[in-house]
Image (tube, rainbow, N blue to C red; front, side, top):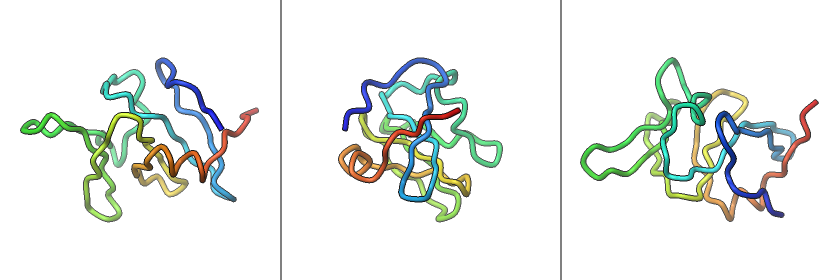
Length: 101
């Protein structure tokens, strides 16, 4: 299954994981606020840069941890509002696009 390249501003798309619907977009390494504006949790950005290493990570508040982002990973917001990172090969196996009305 091919989901194609990441698209432009506010490009999150709906995907289905069994009976769960999540919002997700593929990380391209660019923290563009227009594209990633949906990725907020509890009023704070869910994506942040480590000023020492220059690497980006996603905040998972439920588990009180940061998950490193690699280019090509998927940022997924579950139905509970929590964010996580899913590697592309796993995402391709578990999720399929949803046609939204």
